[in-house]
Structures are given as C-alpha cells and as structure tokens.
Length: 86
Image (cartoon, rainbow, N blue to C red; front, side, top):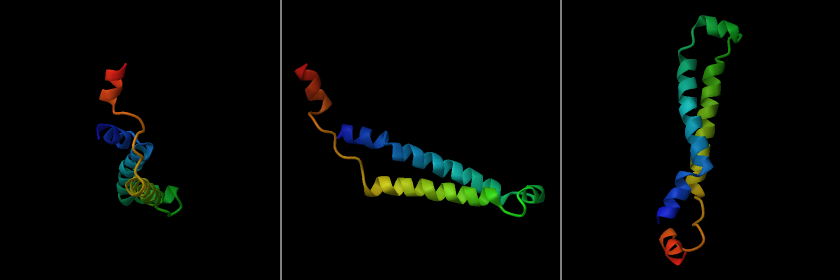
C-alpha cells in the first residue's frame, strides 16, 4: 500500500499539473489586475489573463488525467520482504 502512495506522489503528472495550476492562478490574477499601460503594450489584449486561464486549464487536465488513469501497482514483493530476502 505504501508503494502505491509513493508511486502516486512522485507521478510526473501530479508535479506538472500542480505547478501549472499554481502558476495559472498567479498569472490569471495578474491578468485581471492589469492596468491601462499593460493593455496598451499588448495592443488591447489581456494576454496575462488568457495565458493564465490556459495554464490553469492545462494543469487541471493533467490532474484529471492522473485521477482517471492512476499509475499501476508496482511489481514484485513489498519492500519489507525484499529486505528480508537479501
């Protein structure tokens, strides 16, 4: 059971999804708070808002993928049995 928890904890989808969600929230908030000078630089497009929403969507999709398709059970005997055999 502990091996399965470790496999899920260190799954790359969790790390990438979590980082994209965190950065997506930060960039989205910055995009909502953009002032007129930032909008003028981007020719009227709220690029931070759109990129933040895109990052947030990608991160949530990665976490949903992890939820719907969890990593397989590790093969072989549990770690305690392997240590006793050696």
